[in-house]
Image (cartoon, helix red, strand yellow):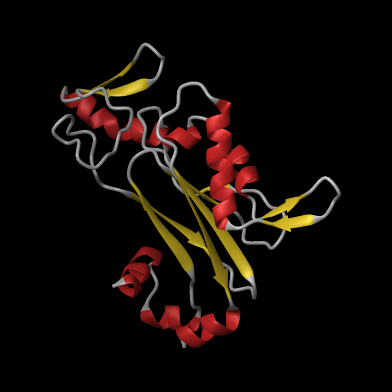
Length: 203
């Protein structure tokens, strides 16, 4: 169950969880799609990365791949675009679902991340998940500014944007930039926390 998984992941006992309820979002990732989130404040705020990209260039992944390289079952090499790829297969990702026939090093096992959520009334977290075509075009800061739930207009007033508007803005700017682009897929989700309702469900 989700409750049992949360207890195991946070290393809390049933009694500890009852005394000090922990609310968090669990994100599992395999591949080079990325998840980012803001700090949940109802105002202009910055975004931070929740997941890590599973690419051969990632230092954590390089350490994991050393085992396969030392066994002679895999190797990492730069292609003509100076990007690191995993061979055999020439994969741009170091973890993936469905490519074990190309490389035993490209495991499907996900990394699991958690985002602690504050129990403030009216606190809304915005999560953005984008495919590699998004992050090859813009970094986290740029995507975060495009996805911001509250934006300051030129006249100094604030505008609240919907999740749909944020997704559309990211896709439009990726397309406008032009050049080589991989697939551009974006999911934007708002999670609103209402303290009274949360306490009622927890108890």
